[in-house]
Image 1 (cartoon, rainbow, N blue to C red):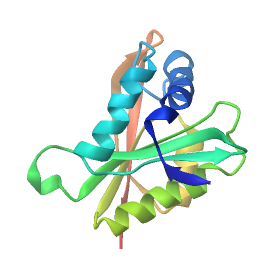
Image 2: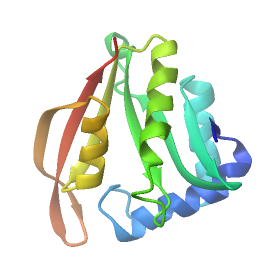
Image 3: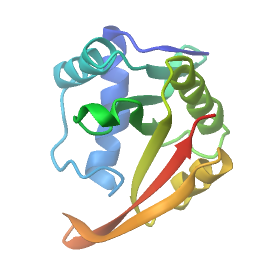
Length: 163
């Protein structure tokens, strides 16, 4: 089941995200966050930006989440969003990413958004493959713009224009 995130989901979402903070370059955050911070982030996305933050549940357990945020603050960017998706560390490769991301895209299109930007640290084969299966095209790459785990990390950007 895919549904909108609720404040009581924050603990499960935080557990998923903190794994990536601690063990992966998928996020450039360095320090784990707590559930209160996650509640604030969900609230900001859903209420301030009026954008979707979705969770996927399997057997009453959250296995992943996806959301969109404002791409840039200037008014002319108002119909472009940046998307993020994270699956529980034990749930990758089970086919959950595609329907979760597709639902996010569907909701963004219904909200009259024009483009979605997906940024990812490189390499990230799973994220690249998911974005490209969903029709995203690589539009650029920045070299050595993040520093984590004692090394420089590149970031690539993929874009999907919603039709």
